Image (cartoon, rainbow, N blue to C red):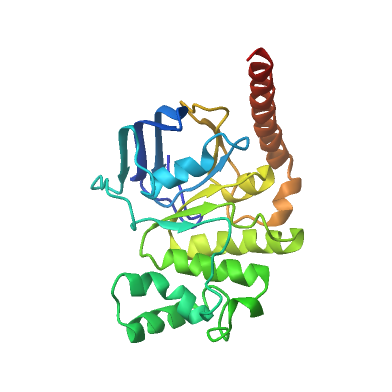
Length: 270
């Protein structure tokens, strides 16, 4: 199967691989013998009930946590030291209020040791792509929620990684801004040719953006239920009303409902 840009196809090549990964926290098993492959150029959404382990999956993928067992590998060469090698955007933008847009975005370049002049030049080149031209000297308090998220996303991409992890990046935005940002993200993904793994609680967002949706049902997660999104690209928000879109939405909702009901039954038996 090929993934990625609508203008053509990309040969299947692994970007991120989980192989028989297990992880526990405070004696609670979260992942157990879990395997997953994300291919280069792919856009994958991850959805599941609160507390199932979605953020833990991301923290393992970006090297902030280490698995108890199994392997996590990045790219063709099977790189296993992931810390600092994956672009990561958390739920909150975490912009430093005393730094301008330019200074906030340049932070990962500075951490890598790039000279300030070169770092700022690279950021300025990227500002138009992210819809931030003319805002280089603005401070976070002067930006709308959507613009703050654009700065955060720009900062994440400047890590240099071709894999970007987005942890509910639009959850705090109002409905209209959220839809605008979803379509903008799709355009940016096509333009940059990167690989994106997105966590969301929004079923429609998961479908609209992704090549496939991975549903995590209950901890410990042993496998993800994969729902292919066989919808053409490029996509727009109006696709939400397409019968094929609604059918996928119903399929995912049924999986989540079954998982929530099963969790409730386990709780009553405990």
